[in-house]
Length: 158
Ligand SMILES: [Zn+2]
Image 1 (cartoon, rainbow, N blue to C red):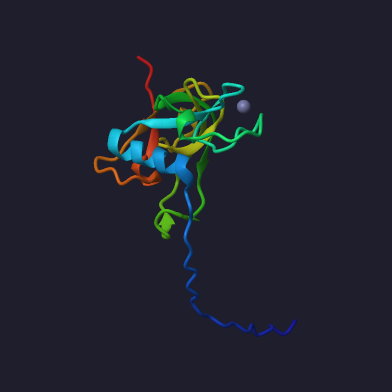
Image 2: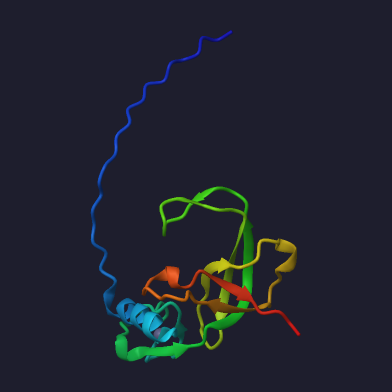
């Protein structure tokens, strides 16, 4: 029987203060989200593609976009991919472990050319399918951050 190797361990906590510059487009995105409960993307003035969330540079044309290129986009779209997470995971919004299982989806908002990922309010993978319509759900008290959109709901067909 092999002798068990004793592990050596040092524990400490480190502060990592930093500032994140959101840029003008993200500032407008979160301001409008908080104050008007609306989504804004960025529309390339050259090719016309709409990005959501807004991007400062069009990935196709490699040209810069400004706040003037931002357009309102609907908070409804179509599910194009999904999963149900059954594994403990640190929630970057809280720093704590996120309760699981939870649904996570890839979807395309109406009139938008890019895809977005976010939480889906469905834990049963058998109740999710490509092509389902989804709608953003907003918190009652908006704070101007991603937590304002806890999840997207699958719109039930009548
Ligand atoms: Zn473009």
